[in-house]
Amino acid sequence: MTMRESWMTLQERQMIWLLRWWVGFFAVATIGFAFFPREIIYWLNVIGHVIFKWPYKTLSFPTEHFWQVLAVSLLCLLTYISFSVAKDIRQNLSHVKYIILSKFATTAGFLAFFILSGPYFAYLAGAVIDFIILALTWSCYIRTNRSRGL
Image (cartoon, rainbow, N blue to C red):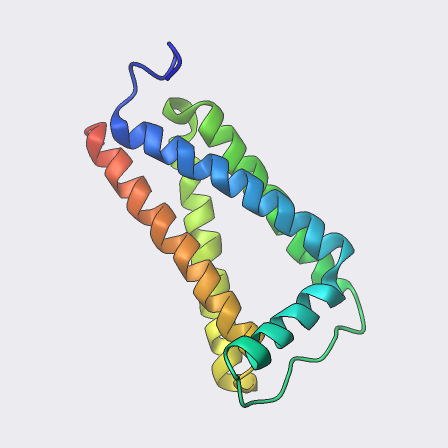
């Protein structure tokens, strides 16, 4: 623990630790979605069929890049928010709400497409992954606020 972190609550240090993980995770996801979008779809399909024995059809490869640009920009923003809050949690903790809002929207979107477009494993995997990020971040955010008396 550095001198700067010694005055923080345990929950603040845990939130910083989680956000540092998110910085790495979101940065890797940004690179993946920017440069390897077909490979991501391919591996989601393979994991669904081979590991989980998913009996339904596979998600097709994207033929255009319109949504890819939006996904990459969102991941860049999530990386920056995670970094800025981890760097100065007392000043920027309220920005965690944007991560929570984003992950709520993507979880709901993946579930909606899973229900309305068909049972593609990639939609279910996206919903589960983003829900885990949402639940961990929200839980840690609430604990951090309570520890500070906010």
